[in-house]
Length: 159
Length: 96
Image (tube, rainbow over all chains, first blue to last red; front, side, top):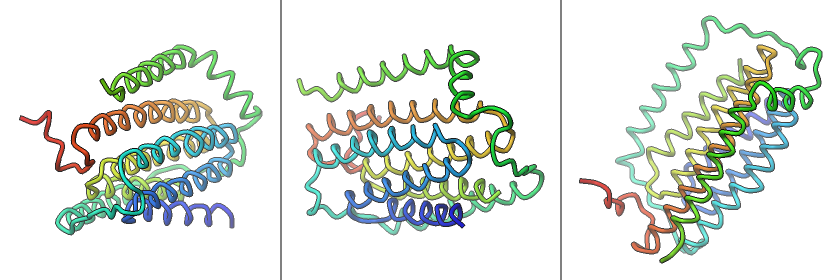
């Protein structure tokens, strides 16, 4: 089944991108995790969101991260140190957190197996909702993005 | 149901990375994974409840994540100009 294999690819590559020692390999496995996530969105019926995820994450964000890696360290020299003093307690804390969350899921979540959203084309409905009901948050989030980009330019400028 | 468990495990992986890494870019990668797990939950519930609002909020989260990565990498680069390293131990400029 294609959904299960996508989930396995996603979890394995996410784990590798968090634990590998070479930072460039971590970014490459982040690309793989984002590709698997876009496949999962497509599988869940969110086709436009899958395309946007590919464009934003794989196209822009990982490229930005790789640029930062190249600007700040030599790629094949640097080995990341990862101390056991931090790793073991954080592993146990995360394991407890995940077990609590999953045990909370088991009780009362209604799962209905609709294959598509009923009646409406997802791209058409998405765009209509975005420009009518969520028009004000849409404009607000564009202002936030503009502010963040101008701020990052100001901060990274050497003077 | 399996998508919810996947989202929880993905959030846990990202949290583990953010807690155990010392490199700042590694922490940013872990933050991306955590935000992605939240988006996965939104998309799953959008399909499950047959409501498109979840996908729109997923789009908003993506935009906020893009701004966050841009600002974070700008901070990293401007810090690297001064200190020549990007480990978390070196950053105590705003600590008192």
